Length: 143
Image (cartoon, rainbow, N blue to C red; front, top):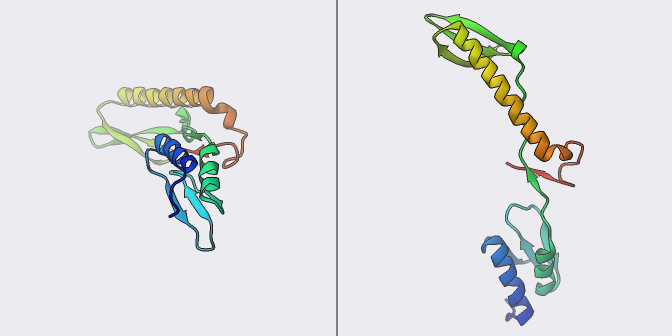
């Protein structure tokens, strides 16, 4: 690696502070330099080491947003007797079980539907403006 110049040292310090020394600088096979930032698929490349570091410092990552919570619909639930307890099925599949009474099972369904609706409305309030955006252009899904 070339001896560090004062400008290179400043750029390295900025990247270290921003990414906690979890970024990579490497020499490209066809010449030039590449900088890979954590969590990003892009590699900032340039012929000169200072130019590659400068691109990495100027890079603004796309915001990462959580996936849209699943809405649950009460009419898709079914309470099924299973021996001495009740099970809850959603869209024909097992959802949860071992509930002592049918009334408690219906209360569990109402609670889960209410919590799913609240999670969805909270997501819409915070991230709803991304609904019509293009993934990879204006945002990225959080994993």
